[in-house]
Length: 204
Image (cartoon, rainbow, N blue to C red; front, side):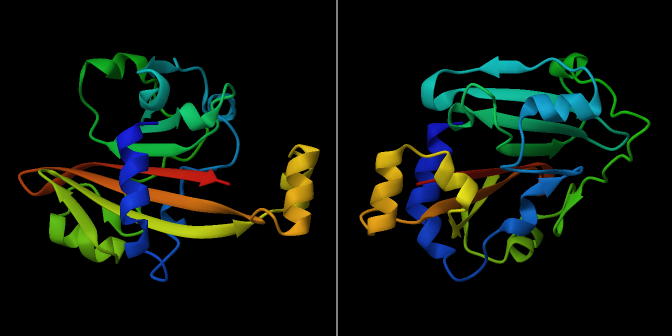
């Protein structure tokens, strides 16, 4: 995932505390961010090429499918590890040279409409601000909203941790929860939303 996104999330996350967890933006097309991998998405939707770009903090993996109204791209990044955990989703206009790598959404699975928790292609910047409900950082034609929350460790989470980490958690020497960061980005042309992108990252 891009380093810039994570840096901005850390800087602006306090704006979102108490307002919302942003969880309503963390699922699309039957898949939930933070659950499963890009391979799981491909197994459900059919063969598609995983497109890799960037290095280190800029590393990103994309897996895309075309619907009648939009292109849906599922995303992973450096924090997704070697298994490419599902960390992001992007929904935008179906255009551009990369579309040759985006097969059609399978007919056997209902196509998702290009809407998500009040976000819709074609909406204005002001409408985007109202939909996310938190302060928005504006960068030219890109609007960004950030949400920060916590998720307590489950027994499965603890079991997967090294013993020394579990001991620290049990003794109170380390936090017993994940910091959950969700970013929502909106890309505009002539004040009309052409693509929205959501990332969800959990850090200890």
